[in-house]
Image 1 (cartoon, rainbow, N blue to C red):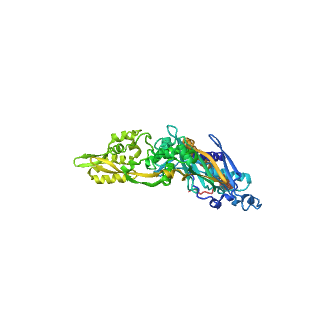
Image 2: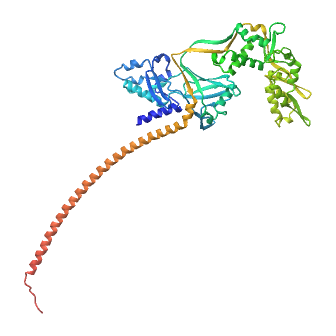
Image 3: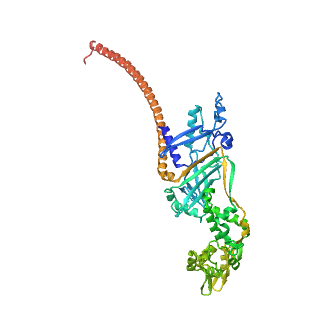
Length: 563
């Protein structure tokens, strides 16, 4: 019965992923193990556990020295035996650093989120050690089954937006010696991947949303693998022609095209999004779009530009601005664009004071425009930082007393990666724009993107599997209670067994004391009875003597003298 309880607790830990920090394994191989002395060809120990969804099989691999140790008939080296295992990996909730009373599956930061994966639990370790004892008929300590130290552990999560576009999140473990293992996912706060992920767990990333999230993470783990090959993104001249890269940026070749063009960061961002889909980066390189975008833009600019991003006078930019993102069949009309861009910020006067504010109506209209009829210039040239600052400035009661020059300096510092502004009359107009100059002649060669790559490894130990959030979250409350009840039951059983043992000892002692007392009492009674008999005999003799004296006195004549 007790063994069944332990097995059930092992099942509970398996499904729950109860946190366990392994401080040591009792055998120096746990810290010095390498895949060179582990036999990974076939699991040496297996243990099957029943789960609500079926069965799960634990595996452990033996040290290559185990066979030699077991051949030692003296049995003096059994403590040197050891096995390695990854257990049954499972997500585990850990305390929120800001509130230790709350356990969360996901912990968020500005750059992404982390989660924890439990590997081999104490009960799983015990089950494998028991299997080893049974198989080899030698005494095995649980500490001789140790965690396999991995060299790679990564998981990916695929997400889809409302129109079916695919997005990917990649997570990896960096520290393989502290358990449970922490896995970090890169997902900046404003990225599309972050938005879709938070929506999938209820919007706010809270514990309540996690309990209903149904997510599948596809994972792989390796131990001491060696690099086989690196697949780096390269776009050949033929591929460039097929996707029309040159024409997108420079326009058609000939008199209508340009040899040098300026591009804004927003234009390059739009191009990277298009390439991300066209080149099927999700499937081929398993890279999130925000990571691809950063690498693609930076490396493309380095390869085909004569000037990297810098501030260029606004009029100069409009004279040679790339048409990418605009209606290719229409002229850019620089004067119209300049007028439109210069109308989104304005000066608002209150008495003798002025402050820079956003013209909400014009900015909203221009941002929604999807043609080159004026306002689209605002959207493609990108003034989001400037607009956000101006909107905040209009609501700030402190800025109403600040000088106009101070406000302009703060605006330009905020928007240094976009536009720089100056004041003309009652408007705030663009002075320069942050752009890069691209050269057509540099785009005909093969383009290589070293930061966009997929590496493959060969490893003696490799596993591919999936982790699910729904099973862990949905079963957490019930299994917590079940585990607690079994632990309580086991403790109560042990206490009752101890009490019964003590009661038996006390009972035997009391019986012995009673028997001793009874014997002493009986002996005392016998002595008293014997003493009483003696006294009775003496008393009878005395009575007889008295009676004899009386009789003798009665028979003697009375010699009395009468007066």
